[in-house]
Structures are given as C-alpha cells and as structure tokens.
Length: 424
Image (cartoon, rainbow, N blue to C red):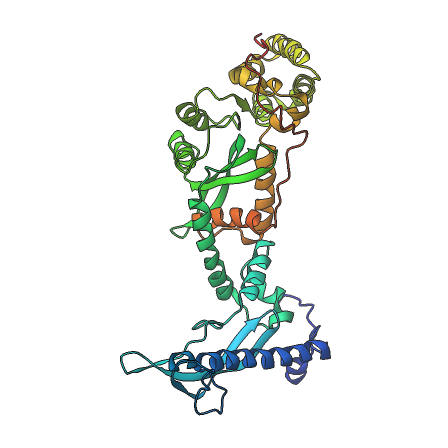
C-alpha cells in the first residue's frame, strides 16, 4: 500500500537545479566586506612576521636602529612560503594564506614560526564560537544550529561543531564554581531544586538540579550555586551548603526554601538559628493534594485570604480561622497547614514591602521554567554536567536576567527578633 504525498513530482534535472530561498540573494556589500576581510587578515599576519624578523618581506637584512645593537634587530630567520588556512568568523568562511618562517634558536637549530594572532589548529574566531553558543542557548538544538546559521556560515557548522564549541564553555564554568564568595554581601538566600531528564548509560534518567540564589545588600539577586545531584536528600543539600561555606559565603540573615525535608535538615546542620521561610506556593500545592478536586477552589480562596492579608495581625487571625474551619470540613488540609508551622509565616517578620518577594521561591521557579523552555527542543540532555552548565550559561550569557527584589529597603532587611504569635 502506498501513502499519498504532497511533494510535487519533478524530473531529476529540475530537482538538482531547483533554487531555494536565499540562494539568489547576492549582496555586493557582504561580498565586498568578505574580500576586504581576507586582505586585512593576510596583511595582519604578514605584518606580525615582519615585526618578528624586523624587516619587510623582500629585505635581506634587518635594519639596525641608530645607536642600537644587533640584539635589537629582531630574530634571525627566513621566510619560506605560505600555508593555506580556512577561517570561519562572523564574516563567514574565507580562505587565507598565512606566511611561514623558520627562526634560529639559541641551540643553533631552527623552529617554525607560530603566529600569536592565529592559534595553531584554530578554525573559527572566538566571535563565531560565541555566536554558535548563543544560538544553542537560545533554544536551538545541536542539529538545528546548522540550518539556523546556514545563511551566515554557508553550512559550515554542524552538530559536532556545536558540541566542540559548547565544551569550551566548561572552562568558564569550572572557574565560576571555584570562585571566592567572601566578598559577596549576601543577606538572603533562596534554595530550591528541579528535576530534569538526562542521558546516563544510554538511558533516560531523572536527576535533580539544586539551585541557590543569593540576594545582596542592595537587593540584587545573584546565582551562587547549581549542582546536579541524584535527588534532594539531606546529604545532597549538605554538600551544596558546605561548598558555599567553604568558598567564604557569610551566614545569611534570611532563608527561603521549598520545604523539602532534606533541605530543612541540611540547613539545621549548617545555619541553625537563621530565620527560614517555607514557600507558600509549595504549601498551597500540598494542601490541594490532600483534598478532593471539588474543594480546591474553596481551599485556594481561604488560603489566599490568609497569606495575602495586609497586616501581621490579620494573617494570624485568618490562620486561626482557616484551621478551625478545615479541621471540621476536611481535617487532612488543616494538618497539612499545621505541618509547616510558623515557618510558613516568617515573611511577616520583614517589612511589608518585601513580603511579596519573601513568601515564595518564585525567583528560582521562574528560572526553572525558562530553563525547561529552552531545552525542550532537545528532549534529553547528553549528561548531568551539561544540564548544570546550560542552566548557568543562560544566566552568565545574559539570555536570562535577574533583577532586584521588589520593594527592597537596604536599611530594613533584617527580620525582627520576636515574631508575632501565630499559634492556633
């Protein structure tokens, strides 16, 4: 049985000669610039070698400066032809002729001259690599980058090139992971995790990315750490926190967490006594999970009235009313709220202008959503390390920006010593 096709039938000769979109878009400006780029680069390399030998191309001896010595005349050596090199840059792919030379060494032998401008085996400019990496970060997978940049690079970039360029990012990632945090004026820390799927041992595996964001004294948010772990256990979070402390992070004044037991235990071991705020969005999801769907709207309305009350006293009064009502109507909901204790309302110890930012881990949740939107074209990331590096690179490259905390007051960021009594 044959399936119908919408592709028009064309003779083989017509298929081979068919033009595609952009094929006949000749631009004399671009063509002229690329020719000039070739001339400029070759002149640059010739000038570099002239400087090393201290003489022009067809001059036999270096001209000594007046009153100078033989040592000031440059390195002794001789040219011997050119080497063809292909270079890919933002100007496209061009073929250039790089001069060659043999230079005399101190032991009486000769060595091949190496250009300091064009590294050995370099085939792309750093700007071209940055463009390829940026295209990848924008959400294009490795196979589609070739088509995305085809008009610029003429199909010279494939998925293997993208992978090699991406590996260069790892050196910057390693330096970022080892940087000192002793000079960071961090006063608030937000911690949360997310699950991503990666390829491990040729199988799709879910791993956890543990993310830590700090808030500086001026209210600016900054990414402090991101680690790929097998889960959100106490040991996993403890490793993340110990690394931050080991690199000099100061004891924060306020913590915002998602409520995972492993994280709570790790915080108790490292930063015991620091005020902790449980994310109100996570707790809302927990409440709904303890009730049938027909009660969800009613629970949400009562919960929002409590969480978004205007004053601390109103929050306390509505909390008592919530517990009293739901103990009678659906006890599991009331018990779920009680499980969080006063940590669900620690935000009331801050100035009201900061309640919105202090109630939730939304600062990280938004990054998670943006990260997953960027990688959804890839289905699976090739490794756990790639997932963490990609998350960091989206921020480091400016693809994702973090702004200051809303309502930040530099002189009034510390929580008050005595919280209001919110006990039921």
